[in-house]
Image (tube, rainbow, N blue to C red; front, side, top):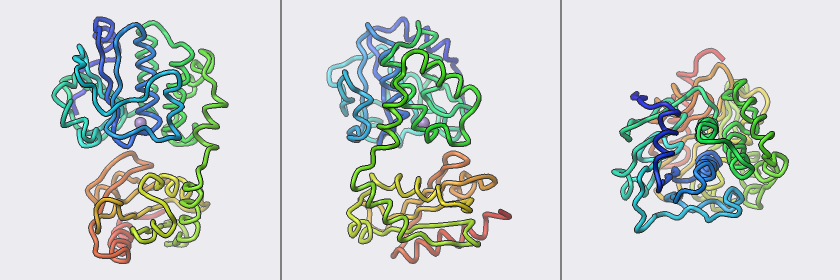
Length: 324
Ligand SMILES: [Mn+2]
């Protein structure tokens, strides 16, 4: 992968720019949105717009408190620099790619597997979140204030599951400490992110607990949801991360697998895997045309029925997961 620009060089370019366009990935999460708001705050005084193909989920709107929410386009805005945040591939940018792909100058990301879709790419797969990189960038451009600190803490807390995942490093804690010192309201942000379940989230948790299946003495667990089942529980694609997160909390399981038919395409099942050492999700998801991080990755499979999807996925996993 081409990695041809440093954060200091990006800081120099951004300092010279007047108008900056920031692109978030589609189905936005706390990292892409927190990084965008954080970068916008770090560029205060310049004309900065954030755009995202999909609307910001209600639960993450707090990231843009005191500012406008990202729109899905920036008509009539002609940026000097366009930066894509936390998006490993063009496809992840969604419809924004079609309209703004040619404009992108710089990609800043922390996903190891990705594509070089920008002239300048800065990818650090050793950090927990793009928010860590934006923190360093903000420091290089003159420091972090309260709103910036809130946004970047949100980015990092989101991608680390509140500092629980294996992507957390000593540096992650050092940055979190600096953000707290800069005024990040960590208690309020943790409440917004982690103690803020909607009724639909609770339904998704109920589905997970009622439908979980145990394999290999419980070392591998799975839930399969077709569209009918999702409808029955009153949940959609936007609630699937809740199912994955809950499965990961089940003791004894080294690998949890969520197989679910998408709301949009009949017979198309997305696979989400979460693991604990030594299971490598990237390797397993690679068998289903996907990728991601070692402890969290995704892929997809086509099937006529939920049973067929489950059989295809579980057979492949159990054959390839090795000694665990
Ligand atoms: Mn991220």
